[in-house]
Image 1 (cartoon, rainbow, N blue to C red):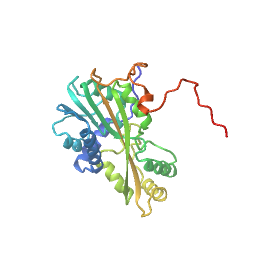
Image 2: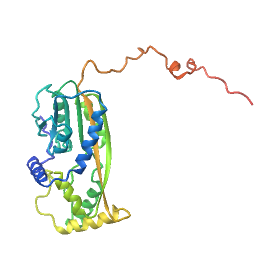
Image 3: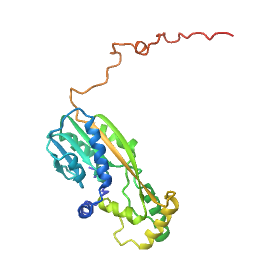
Amino acid sequence: MTQTPRLTDRPALTLHRTRAQRRPELFLLRDVAADLEERLSEIKKPFTKPVIVGGLTAPFEELLPDAVVAPDSEALTLDPSAHDLVLHAMALHWADDPVGQLVQSRLALEPDGLFLAVFFGGQTLNELRSVLAEAETRVMGGLSPRILPMGDLRDLGGLLQRAGFALPVADSRTITVRYRRLADLVRDLRGMGETNALVNRHRRPTPRRLFEVAENLYKKHFSDSEGYLTATFEFVFLTGWAPDESQQKPLRPGSATARLADALGTKERPTGDHTAPSKS
């Protein structure tokens, strides 16, 4: 059996999250939690058995104070059909097997239970990714993995269907944050537990010169008119429902009971019946 390639160093990720809890920088996560609160308010259904899956979950626990909290481990500690809402919060981008996480989440839902996920998408930190690659080539003569590869929205939307969810929806939201210095961006990433935890990262200390070159490149290519460095954060939202007989289903071809022409208020013509153009 083929094993899933290892992307994430889980002990390192746990260490980074523990450090982040001591000096958190959670303004982005709180913004995303507010977005999720609005989305949930539009669903006319109460949720009484929610669970939050993730690492740094404090802003989401404020949103769902009665929720059970479960770590985003490879094997989720969730009982089958035990929940009516699974919120997978800012952790799916670290999963070696994201489809496996979705399948386990679906199995933890009761019929017609809701799955919501939010995580970083492919446009996140594209500026930092670019300048670090160029700086490392200049300073160290090669590249090493420093920023987590993140999926494109077009690909991520298909994960819900593969995992067996009904009524799947995927969308994204982009936030641009301005920083005076590169160190300020790194501080925020550290405060969210989102610094480098890749298995194949270099383990030796990074030369200070690398970050000096990277900051100069950042200022040259990705600064605004006031000299601030701009950083993109893309948040992908996935929504799906555990299948249930009560859910809407597409009609069978030919089963419609009303004509489209009547709905549009137009006259229906047989195929090939065209009005001849008038002659001048």
